[in-house]
Length: 335
Image 1 (cartoon, rainbow, N blue to C red):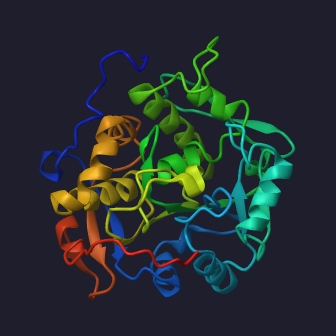
Image 2 (cartoon, rainbow, N blue to C red):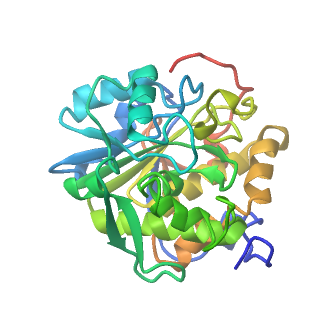
């Protein structure tokens, strides 16, 4: 299916009341701080053991919206002292296109307090894609094979191609190597246009890549989405990202990748219309909801969930409850 063919509903938000099936647990905190991140991580970290990788978008030089380094430094120092941050090189020619340039960008952005493994620096490895319609395997950075567990720490935001960038984008694009894997996701065979795959086919290809990563780690993987500084632009746009107009919301965590991303999207849609408009329009115009429906089809998780408010006695709340009191975004300059 090309970008010009009819889609399968990725432009439409599906309300919670229209979903069916089982439910997973998603934890939520409004505490956007180092303490908040550590507190919610503690709810899902029991599945991590052995050699632990932290998949994090470390950003373009001086990117203004990435997860604050100080938060990640505190978490790794106190909770994951032997963990390694993992990344891969980019598909586009820029400051993270080659390993040498990527390392310089890591230094500029201050990711120097723990090891950072650019997983495709020394080659690639193929991981199987089970049940996919586009791939039977996906090319990943070779070093992904060096780890037993994966902590997917995601800055939830918009995305130029994907509509939104959540946990699926973080591992689906972020673990695929910079030349082969990302090309398999973005570019049609024989095309000179790097970005010739679009809309729903792109969502499906990206999701199949994410499934390969999730299946590889099995039960030894967990997901945290930080809903802060949510531009409609991805962190790959760096200082060129569109201004943030969506309020900061909080942090979600789950052992279910679909529930983690679905709950984050639900919170965006639970905002008053004038607050959600830009990010919701970005998601719908790019058919981003196809990420969620295709995860359902691939059996990657549940679109229904129990949202647990860890700030208030572990009470179960709705997405609307979670965003009550959201106020206009104000830059805090903490990176």
